[in-house]
Length: 422
Image (cartoon, rainbow, N blue to C red; front, side, top):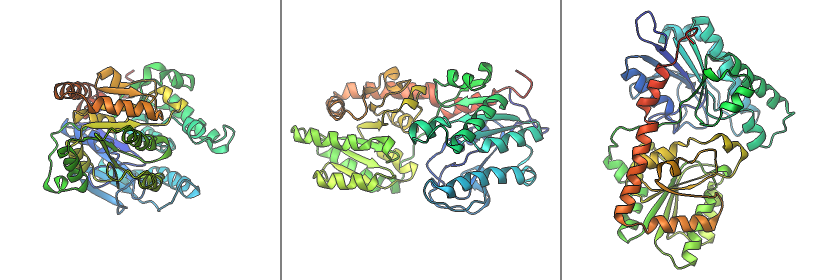
């Protein structure tokens, strides 16, 4: 069990370089885990920079209540792109966590568990030192595998100094963390090869917020929702993609598949794409050049509540990622769990070490980038009978509630042993 403070309840610090939450940003895991810990009687604080590129808007430094959860926004300077400024931002966040730890302990209480979440791993160097200072459990939560993300996704040379340093950080974390939590299901072999004792590995995947979605008047009036209703009223099946619009996301294949269906005389499928990323304008140009404006609509990233309302008015959820060797370790995409929770049949255009859609029998799995296969999958899902569509959606919802509810994931953290108990 997690160590308890002198007040009898565990105090958890969750440190995430790109944390989101209601009105903060789209990566909501920190918020929902912290909320569940609070409901279980623990204390919890989320630490994140006052600026990062995934915030909805920059935040003022200091403590804020975010829908019932304490957030500490650590002072941070703005940066652009992926250059030296972003690296300096990473280093500064880690350094400030270390230097201001006594102040944070006065504000939020001495921690019993510190979780370093690793969109990048460098912050673990600070959180582990803080954990040792307070006798707290040091947890390294691995979202992305570094330095493999640099070498296999970004194409950085294995001999680059940043890769070498990042590899050292990974090995240090695997050897010294009390627990390494993987959001990916197939990482144990890799992590044991880089210093982790198998008994210190835990799989706690991405989760889904399972409270009943309240469809507010403002969300129902959002242009995406109005368009989805309009298209469905004309007999179309609406496929939704909600997520990043970068090269790894392969969303252009969805646009090309819709074009292929149209060219084959299939007018049934229409797509609403919601997100932000480097290929946003490229997709907009493609939609215009292919004359797809009557069946493919591209919208800016929008609040999670509006996305969930949109899903309630959709017929199919779409997820894709460009093939990468790194995916052999599995995937745990938030948007997939949202689709399943919304009872949407899913088109899963992805190759990875796991296939949750196949496991749940809640959709169609195809090879990513295969426009013909994606078009065929869309056609198959759009022509399901109503009982078939409902049954498929229910299977997905049952699966995600069993394996990915934040209540269960938060309890998994609370069950971690205190230092020395293993």
